[in-house]
Image 1: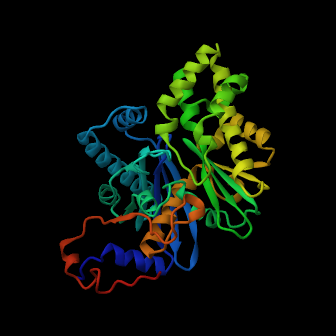
Image 2 (image 1 turned 45 degrees about the vertical axis):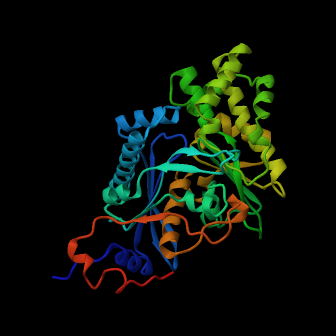
Image 3 (image 1 turned 60 degrees about the horizontal axis):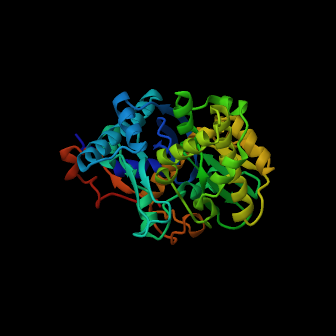
Length: 407
């Protein structure tokens, strides 16, 4: 009986013949679930989207993660268990969707859960931390996994975010240029696509990290559905002016930020100022929505070489109708959902990490100075393998014998 095939041999073979099934797994800054995208890849064909699903975290893990993201302190023991449990959850989520679609996974690209990301002002230099150990991802998924994508960008002199922008030209090949893609996750990030130059990308400021935090505090709900409460209020111009004076918004790109800047303490400071001004819940939410939209509008005018013809919206914030209307009003630019260009808004980030995992396996660099400030040439991510049958370690199929890299 022939020995089991090494998973990388199988992966490269299936990439060559266009049958590789790759999952991208993501829990974003909002941490509202595990996004999983499944795609079919081949080195000589365009990737084919197959399925997308957002799966809830196990209740105990969701509660622990919310505590951490809202400022709870982690010791070494807590970090060790959380990165293990998140890795298992990400791997199981990928495997669950593949089994639902009656597919066998060949590769997983797992972003992990960001628990810290610098804001560009750290005297000791930039650092970032995503939890969800890649070895546990690979073992739970039963397939090779690539994880920890942002560290190589930092090591190459970059911000570590928004790395997803590097592949936006591939994800939106027919989008008329110049155009901008706005991802409304916990943090809002913008990609500008010109007709002939490399993409420009940067974080513009808070998005759902602020709006969802306000909704939890004011409404006792995880978010303001459709922006309904915000639509009933009126933005406070004095509070909006204060919020727009935040130093991050005035920094020149490349730049990135995270919850340490716009997380729970920031939400608390906004609520404190709102109480001083006597604002009700709907007015506070309207002001937060205005801040997100106005910070995007000012970024478009200040940091791009020209205004885009279209603003394509992705991420969970695309479902917030009030925010979408406010973006169109304040930017003066036609907005549309990324769905109009063939990509579900909630699937962009997970789809990107599937692409990035394949690029890692093929040895293709994914850094661009105009996106994060990193030097060109870094291959992002670290590879983890699933358990190998003992016979496979000594077989002719083991790495170094029959492995061929199609890239």
